[in-house]
Image 1 (cartoon, rainbow, N blue to C red):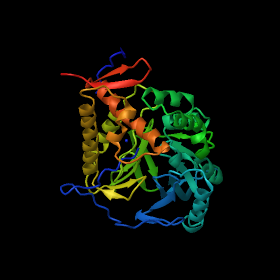
Image 2: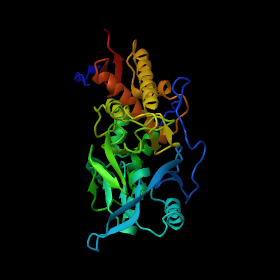
Image 3: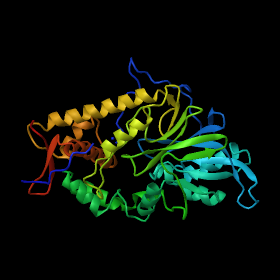
Image 4: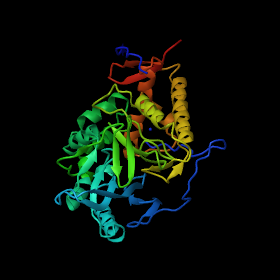
Amino acid sequence: MSTLPTAPVMQQPDARVPPHSPSHPLNFPLADQLPDTGSAIEVAPGIFWLRMALPFALNHINLWLLRDRLPHPTQGGEMQEGWTVVDCGIDNPATREAWLKVEQQMLQGLPVLRVLVTHMHPDHMGLAHWLCERWQAPLWMSTSEYQSALLASSGVSNFGGAPTMAFFASHGWRQPEELAQVKARVGYYPSMVPHIPGAYVRLMAGAPVQIGDRIWQCISGYGHSPEHMALHDAKNQLLISGDMLLPAISTNVSVYAMEPDSNPLQLFLDSLKKMAHLPDPTLILPSHGRPFRGAASRIEQLCVHHADRLAELLQACRDQAKCAHELLPLLFKRPLDMHQTTFALGEAVAHLNLLWLSGQMLRQRDVDGTIRFRTAQS
């Protein structure tokens, strides 16, 4: 058994985290209202909530339709009324049909002027090419997300293939039939994001984006995706949080084959601090779940959730070194199918890497190549 090089000290699948506690309740101003397919609910003046179906256990994504006004591209700078779309849904017939209903029922005869994507994951990026082409509208997103989408759509991705299979095997997932399915998932991303627009407008952390009469500031987030962008309207106390801040589940934070020694959980926790100052009345518009108020409370809940998982891992590995696959039942109490296991294992490694990179765990490799973690003795 050989020890891997010591890492320097460096400063989740969607697990359910209770959305409130007796001392820190979240507020859901729309109660149990949900928009029907093809329709929308106005959550603030000129901001409409759409909801599209997903063919996963996480069965929906929230999209946002914002009234906008931009210079007309061919009429000498004359202002054109229309809409900005925030996130798109996956590319499949059902989502295209839902967007056609939105066009008929919600757009009031006005065009989509731009398509803004918070990050490159399929449920957010999938239909961007179709919407951009349909409306001759530009794509807006961060550079890291755009470039990652290009790689993933071309088949160079974190979602399958031989490198991912080898990565999972190194962390103890060695069932041949299941790993063969992982290897076959090289087409997973392109199946839902078949094309990427050929050009984009860059979103940058801290930069303002004017949409209609509102000024939104970009807030970058890391750990869940390469360079996620949330949008904050401080004047009107609104946050389009994407996947960085969700009301009832914890955002998946995974280590991937192409960056096996990364520390995404620390990046994610650090990113949450950028939103911890938001006042309680701020209305959070998340990508999954219902709009809510209480950002600081929710961030506290998420931090406690991850701290508890880290403490459980330290205890479990105190007397014996264990691999990530062996620790899945500790972190995820319900049975996992093959699809869910891919995300769960990536998240387990993210927690273990944080403990290793902070010096709280030692990492070693067995003679068969399995990576195991053991709690460092103080």
